[in-house]
Length: 192
Image 1 (cartoon, one colour):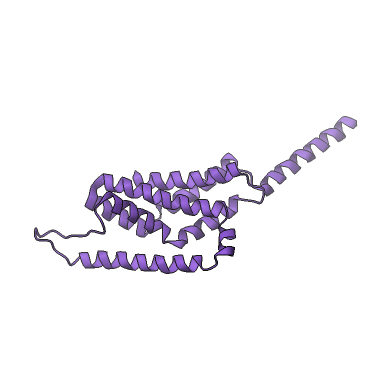
Image 2 (cartoon, rainbow, N blue to C red; image 1 turned 90 degrees about the vertical axis):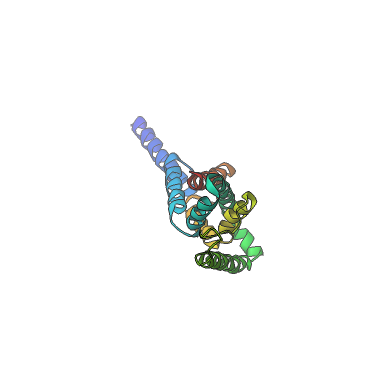
């Protein structure tokens, strides 16, 4: 009888520990796969980054695309780090930051649209269309970073995704894994 009660208490304790781990949102292989899938879906979704990358590669070649991808990954790291390690704290101290990023992002996207639209009518002396935001590696790096940095929707994406995996008890290691996962997936997607 005592064995049965002890066994029951052990099973009850195991179930309680499993529940506590779920509540604390510990990073397991399953939660990491879910996080990686969400990050891959975000990186693979078409948008201004893909359009600008395509144009960068057509104009500057593979090397320009790799530089763009590295810069894009750096921008993703920036937002993922901010969200994982305290975007809500940052916004409580700087509430106009999201408005600033919205306006700056709009201006940057309008500038890109203007450059792309006006270049469709520009013909160089050799008769080929000419489109250049900047054909230097530094310019490609700047374009890759700014297309991310000036898009506050990326911060909102990470805020929506990371809150599903982060809890009050999330460790530094779990946050680092999340930021690294997002950065590596995005950089790899845009480089390869």
